[in-house]
Length: 273
Ligand SMILES: [Zn+2]
Image (cartoon, rainbow, N blue to C red; front, side, top):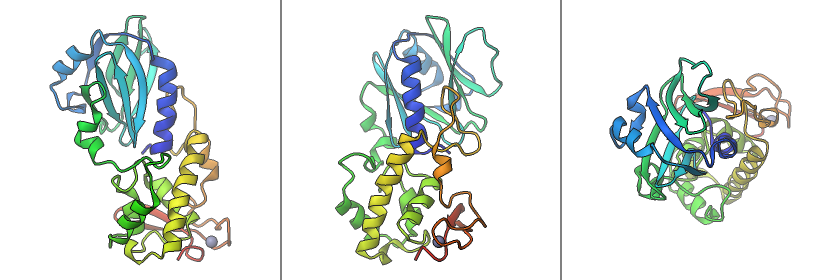
C-alpha cells in the first residue's frame, strides 16, 4: 500500500502531467469507487473543469479543479497513468478523465479498493476522511508534546498507534517498522510503557525516515511505481522491512517477522527493546 512518501511522489509526478488540462469527458467503470454522490453527478460536476493543482494530505491525493477538490485514496494498488486517448485500455482501468487535448488520465486499480470523493474546492477539511487525520509528520504542526501525550495514553502496541492516522498522518506498514527499528523500540511494546527518551527517538525517527523516503521518491515494494512509471529509491535503505532472516544491519542478529494485529511486522530482537 502506498504510504506518505509514495503518495507524495505520485502527487509530484501527477502535478507535472495534468495541471492546466481541461476535462471534457469522464468514464466510470466501477461506480462504488465514487463516494459521497452518485457516479452520474460526479461525472457532471467534473466535465468542463480544469486541473489547477495536485496536493496531498496523509495518504490522500487532493486534485484541485476550477470549482472542486477531488480526494483520491489509492488504498492497496491504485495508480494513475496519463495516456493518449488512442492507447489500448488496460482492463484494470476503472475511472478515466478525458482531456480536451485528447490525452486522458486513467485510474487503474486491480483490487478496486480505491476511492474518489468530490467536494467544493478547498473544502476537504469538512470531510470525515480528512478531519480524522493527525498532523503531517514533516510540518511544524507535528509537535512532540502532542505525540508524547497520545502515546502515553494508549495501551495499544506502538506500531498500531503509529499506523493510526490520527496520531500522525501518512505512516503505513513499511515505515512503521522502519521507525520502530531506528528508535530501538519493539513494535509490540504497549505505547504507555515507553520512556521519555524512547518517545523522543520515535518522534525524531518519524521525521527523519519520512523526510528521507520522500526525498528518494518512496519505496518500490511489489507493484508501486509513480505515474511516470519510475520506481522509488528508498527500498534500498530499508533496514528491517522485508528482511526476515537477514542479519540486522547494526548487530547481525537475524531479523524476525511476526504478525501484529494481522500486519507483517519486522524487527531486530536484540537492538529493539
Ligand atoms: Zn540488531
